[in-house]
Each structure stands twice: as C-alpha cells, then as structure tokens.
Length: 88
Image (cartoon, rainbow, N blue to C red):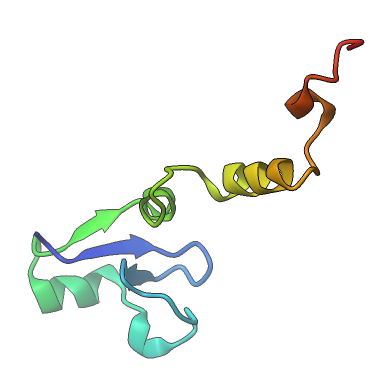
C-alpha cells in the first residue's frame, strides 16, 4: 500500500493520514513537490479529508451525525427524533 496523505483545509498543506496533531507543526506539513521528491511521482496516494474523517470510526457516521445521535440518546433530540412532530 502506498503512503497516504490528505490535503488539510486549515493549513493548505498535506498530512499523513496517521497525523493527529497541530497542523502548524512544520515537520508534519508537506506540499506535493516534497512528497514527489520523497516517494517518487506516483509513490504516494492523496485521499479526500472527508473520507479520512469517516475511516476513523467504525460506525461510518460523520461528526455531525454522531453528535446528533449522542444528543438524541441523552434525551436532547428534536421532536422529530421522538415522533412528536406533525401534531403528534
């Protein structure tokens, strides 16, 4: 498997998928030219950051979906979650 990197929307650089730190850390930031130099022109894979977020969890939910599920299970859901909408 090729080393995988994602484009960070915060710092506009690339991070390894295993990265879990402050993206301002210069040692963890790469640009495509750096990666090509280190791994070769086709020696690394770019993945979408949204795909990375879903890979981190077994449930496959986005952060927003997981937050809504947590609130619902704690009794803080909406009327629609409990069947109390539409005049019920």
